Image (cartoon, rainbow, N blue to C red):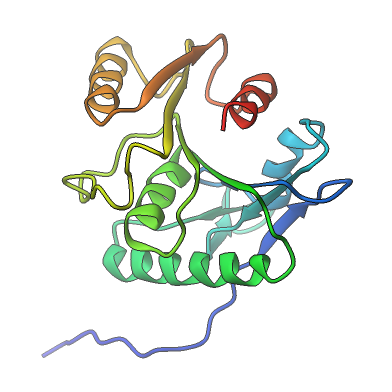
Length: 212
C-alpha cells in the first residue's frame, strides 16, 4: 500500500523591494502572477509615484523552467497538488514577511495588490492572515471559490476594495468578464477597467495609492 505524508521543514520566501526615496508613508505589496519572478514584476512599478511609497514583491515558493528544462525561470504560488498545504504555507510566509518589514517601516497606510494568480493568494492572505490593509486590489484575478464568504472583520467597509481588469485581457472573454465583475460588485468591490491587456497599469496604480 502506498501512502503520502508530510514533514515540516524550514523554507525561505524570496522578495524584492523598491524602497521609497524618503520616509515610507505607504507600503504596497504586489503579488505576481503565474510564471513571473518578483524582481522583474516589480520593474513594472519602478517609476510609480509618490516618492513616499515602498513596494514589496514577495515571490511564490514554487520555481520552475518556463520552457523545457533550461532557460527562463518563473514562479508560482501553488498548483492543484497539495494546494491546501501551499495555501497555509503562503499565508504563514507572507505574515512573517509583513512582521519583518514592520520592524523597518512604520507606514501610515498599507495596500495589497494581487495580480492574476497572485490575486487569489492575496485574497486568502487577507482572509486568513495577520495583515489588515487599508486597501486591496484584485487585478485580473478571479475571487477564489474556497473563500465562500468574506468575513466582515477581514474585509470590512473601511477597507477599500477594487477589482481591476484590462479591456483586452485575453484571459477574460465577454462572458467571464461579466461574471467576474458582477461577483466583485456583490462583494462590495469597485470595478475599474483600463485600456490594456493582462498586465499592470502604472497610472492606475498611482491613482489607487492616492485614493487610499
